Image 1 (cartoon, one colour):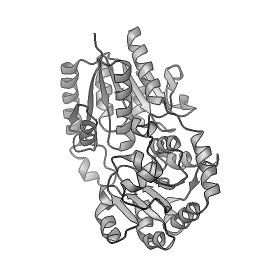
Image 2 (cartoon, helix red, strand yellow; image 1 turned 90 degrees about the horizontal axis):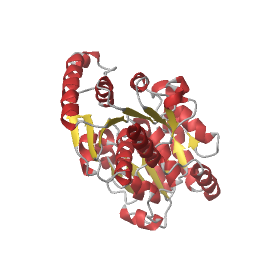
Image 3 (cartoon, helix red, strand yellow; image 1 turned 60 degrees about the horizontal axis):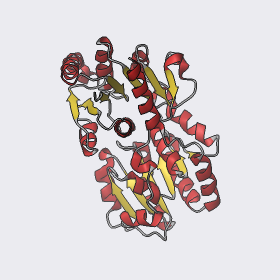
Image 4 (tube, rainbow, N blue to C red; image 1 turned 45 degrees about the horizontal axis):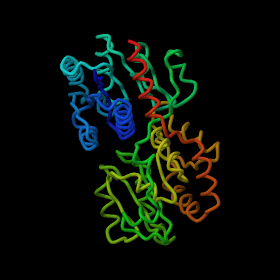
Length: 365
């Protein structure tokens, strides 16, 4: 009899794309399995998951708003409504297991599944676990992690070190540099920088790139600039008439972007790092300074210490980011050293490991 799985979570590409990679791995190992995603209404998973060919149901849920406390007035009602919606979904779909990848919708779905005795699995991508995952981990069947030392957050006997799942189109990419650069309408003969702040953009990176946009042209460097939606209009206006700049709020074919970039500017989220390791890219990291426990800075230091990346603080990005990126773009020897060292950290089969462990666990039930 075919197994049914719910995959819950989202909010950012760092949650959604690993979830899609896990879904694809489950399908490879058990082709007749049924999959249902559960996300938060209004979040990017409601668009990206159907584009990947999967069904998704949306919950009326939102996170706690720290910057505007008045917006939290309706939060208890949304939470109650989301639990009612989750119970309806669980009754209707009757999953054999529920997998949580983080994000607003992950908590109510896994909590309700645990209350019903349905096996639950957690994927924690960061080296510092979120509060929801710590709570859910107490009753989870298995917790899949990418870092050592996660026993301080989760029961040691249920932790499995798998690495972070990377999208199949990046792991399996055979796109050449020339092909990729032409895809963006640029010149393969010129050095090319990819600037990506993740799926939602990065204010510090975008403002530094915008302030120094002329410097790329002066240095003979091309720019592929993924801005995220909040900065897209501003970036489009700044880039108008510049033949060396390609910009968009989102790049659906990231395998082309990684193949095109000789040097990458990136945040230091766990999933971004996993993709950059697989793609073997020389990177200048600009960690998001307000991540929980400043874990992005810790992530970046982990690579810098291994000579597998450079780092510029977000607070210093306007002064130091572009000079560092331009210098690295012209230094082929350092680029090669960074490529070699970051490539050694790549994990290409994390999604397969996770799928195998889920299937083995539920077969024992």
